[in-house]
Length: 87
Image (cartoon, rainbow, N blue to C red; front, side, top):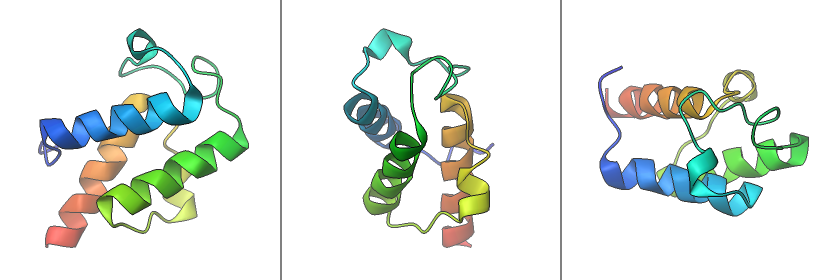
């Protein structure tokens, strides 16, 4: 991981998760699982991916979105996608 995401980018991700899942900020840890810990359902996951795509001007393939099951995995996926777009 190369820390491609700025603090502003990270804050935007947190805000998307907070808005979509209607949770408290203290629930967002690197290891928090979207479904088990944060109560996301399949529709929430789709809406999160769509919000991330819109915010970061990306297209996240379904197979990659499906493996982003934790908050940390979302950050890793975004870093990977943003690095690909800059190369």
